[in-house]
Image (cartoon, rainbow, N blue to C red; front, side, top):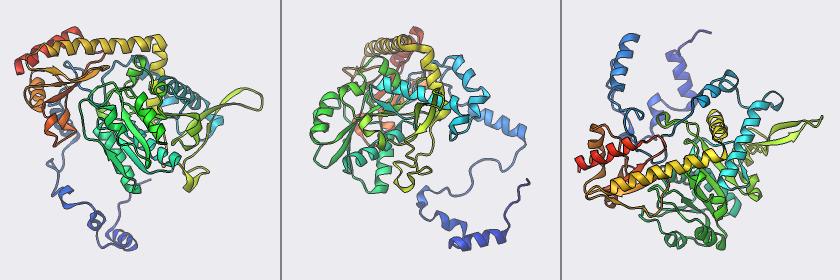
Length: 448
């Protein structure tokens, strides 16, 4: 089929039906300050070879994560992904498979999603998990809406050390429904009593992240107890799923819903996505869970089979009563997760977690030896925060010039908070070596 561009008459007819005079009128709700004035500073036209050269030159200005010692976290973590994972997910039956609406021809897809759900439920200490969400932030926001449905209340309390991106997504989604959100300000440390004091009779849920945005491990048990005493739910956010190989699962600490980011297992950094949202809950709340759920059954001959069950989405029987407008799941990313975790096995996963923690401890000890540097965490997994004697953003830039990607300045995601100007969030995973850590410590001494 040839591509036939619209004529001026076509455009006029379409705009007339819509009821506007020009295409510009379609963007009148976008503030002027957010609109670009003029064209992007790029050549109007170039040949393919010229474009390739120009883009390659621009890309060469970046420092690739794998080319230098890398200590950036903040919700996306660099881990080793075995070659087997990429090899298997690129098989055509996985890479090009469509959404599994017809179980009789999609048993393979349904089975691996069922296995994925089982893995997530076991990791989080929960009864049931869905077949994944878009990413951790949208899973968090959907969990808040689910809590509203369960409790018949509308107010959410957000911990001050919830990732700022997660907080923004929750606030954005709740604003559309007119639901109030009470978010505590960033705090080091994030004290349980401060969160508990905000829980009232109108609270539907409390959202707490562990490890926190600053890397601190949070004891969820007292917060869960206080929330339940007021009839509210506890939503636990796990930004670094590898931590569940070492720390107590949120389900065992009283969480009612557990959400998180699964990127760390089987999925690379990928310039920020696509990522993998995890979502698990208690059996009694399963009918309010968003997304799709794969179930195990038997066919007419008694053979094991898999189906989509509890279809709560708007395309299915629920229509306007759907629990969510989430229309899909991160299928290929969840498959990568399942393959990688299967390769590790239970003991391998625990060992991976122990290596991550040990590497972070070694790095924290090394950085603490640098004059003027203070480690701010009392308990952490593979990420922690340090206070520097000068602004963290400038230090990070100087470290990058020296060939070390040293971490995330806290106020990059919390602008306007002067108390965090000198705070640097640092992550160390299994990919970091003793030489990497030594290079970081030496570079930081030089910069400071």
